[in-house]
Image (cartoon, rainbow over all chains, first blue to last red; front, side, top):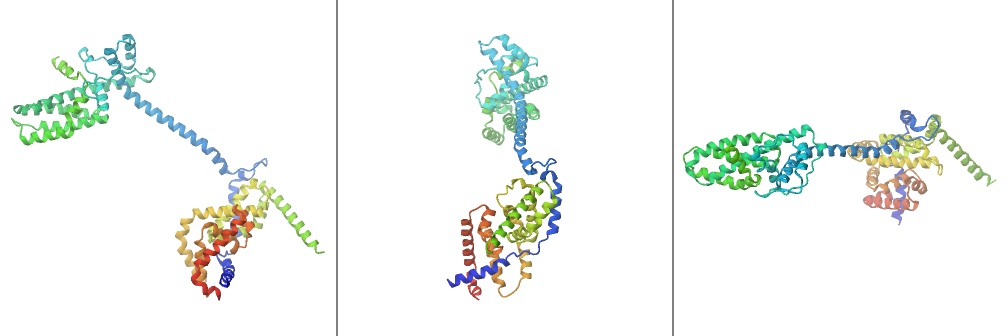
Length: 294
Length: 196
């Protein structure tokens, strides 16, 4: 207890010496305070002696509405960007839908479809032989969905909004459709080439190499085109390019075992042939046949 | 005759209070003379409190200036329920404690330098013990440290501390007891020295 009292007494003496302040620098501090107060005179008193208001309070009051407004503007901008991108991507699909509806659906009148087509598809229609068979736009759709070959997309409602499709976008859509047609043809060629290779006709090695070089040129051109923006199609074309390069190097009269082994392994690893088949829409082979016979 | 002194004292207090309210009213209207008068009347205590809590002259000056600027900017919030000094000390403790939180990292970095200066200035037989005390106080929880410094070092009453910190006087008493108990434990090794 005595010890406790001693401590309390000692503490009472020692505490005032802790952080003992020196003389107050009054003038120096007042100079700074008055300078700060003068810097914001309107905060202390209004001309009419009204209640002074702190600048901090003012700015905070506007902070939330400003933040909300900024968020709205940003949201609208993002929405516009997304809509623009969607309309460019959606336009070719709409054309494909119209095509499939024309051939399959009996409930939609032909006149109605043609009216919509005028708006959504300003490019010249493909040749009659091609029109009915392969929809090149469907290549991308099949790749996206991973649909097996021969599986036809169910006709969906035509959602084209004429106000959203301008002449520039229509021209873009036309170019895209052409590129997709070229992609389809290249993939069909590749499929036929690979099928011929797997037929195990060893005497055709040199011919296969020549054929592969032709397809390789198309593949590389496609990889440099807008079609390559489609990630899945680009990956498929890149894998195809690799295989085609291997086939193109075949120069001997007969297929070497090592070369064949390498090729087989690549084909198996990349699962190339099934991917090409699922990417190529039904009837694409007919296009090639028709176009070659023309 | 004995009753005359307290009456005079209360009258003087009332006059002071009335003068203070007038001063506050003028300061609110932007009268710089009134502001200066209020400043002169309270700056010493405000500065001392800021210095005690911060332990740094530079910080004490900064916090004192901030406290006065904020007080003059917010004079409308002062309703006159308490004395201007009490209201000002509430602002001072708030500004100082918030400022210390912001400057904590900086203070930690500067601690060795401050310590060196303090060591050079101080001396005496119980130098180690006082140094230990300073460190032990610095290590106290914020609430305990603030109450301890305000009460034991600066001489504020529990009511004043309670009003400045916005807590009950019972809480300040508890915190002061805790602070002293912790200091006692922290300085137990030096028990012989405080008995001397």
